Image (cartoon, rainbow, N blue to C red; front, side, top):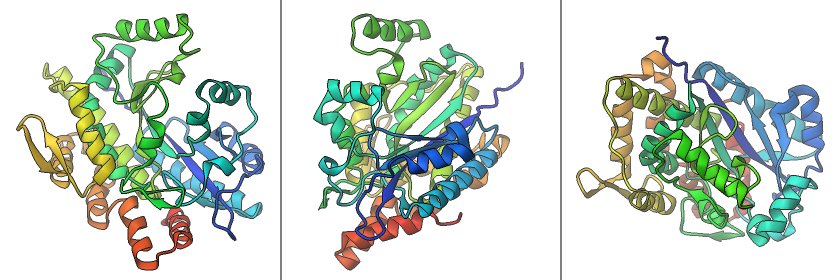
Amino acid sequence: MAKPVFTLGIEEEFQTIDPETRDLRSHMSQIVEGGQMILQEQVKAEMHQSVVEVGTTICQNIEEARHQVIHLRQQVIELADKVGLKIAAAGTHPFSRWQDQPITADVRYDKIVEELQDAARSNLVFGMHVHVGLETRELGVYMMNSLRYFLPHIFALSTNSPFWEGRETGYKSFRTKVFERFPRTGIPEHFASASEYDEYIALLVKTGCIDNGKKIWWDLRLHPFFNTIEYRVCDMMLRADEAIALAAVMQALVAKIYKLRISNLSFRQYRKALINENKWRAARYGIAGKMIDFGKQEEIPTRTLILELLDFVDDVVDELGSRHEVEYVLKMLEMGTGADRQLAVFRQTGDLKQVVDFIVAETSYGL
């Protein structure tokens, strides 16, 4: 039997910035319309008019994903420049107010706003989503159950939203606190099978809770239409290198869990309530705090647990061709997360506009 490829797809949500005020500014769909002439379906509008989302095509390996992520960042920065805007990559804007940001005119967004009201209007947050291709939905549910444990570790590395509406929140990721206002968010439940998962979605559709499975906004979900597992837990990352590193870790975790499964070994399952404790710690402290090692039943520095995660996937990264990308996590531990670096600029300058300038500069780093 041929080994699965574990294809990759990466989606990034960017902020469009006024270069004078450094506030968010609507791109009036100019970037999207201009981008679609070059990038077709790889660029699209989001609910707020100051958000642009770009996404790779299906990538066969991390090298291809890197090439596309860099190309898409280059293109969206160039398109923004042509209409007098800058592009920024962070989980929240340091001082912009959601009340001032117009909503994109679209039937889908109208429905969401009608249903969720201010929870939707205030959802001015920016994330990175990573899809990993799988052979079957049954395998997807198995992965969803096993990978839940690692979501706080990945999330801690991605934390990049310490400010909200001009305030230092005390969180390394306030984005996740904002998004929790939505229903069907957070760590997913455990499902015994793909049929149980599909029955859950069917029940929600039948009872008018949702119109399709895309309105399940968990931190990790089996995609309702494609055979992919979709990680949705991450803040938008400052640098392309960081985005690629975490995508490589996510792919490696899928490959590792698969390798254990075909060897008749399973990764221990933990309760959602326990995993949530680690997620909260990751949101609050990023990589600077401690998380719980449930096996040892004790607190361990988050950095130590991330190093253990790298050891856990070490035997699959060479086959995937992603050792270089996965090992970039060591540099991330050294330089701090996006939140750590944003806060360092603010401590040094006391000026949130300079934080925005820093984010803009980091967004194009290494391109």
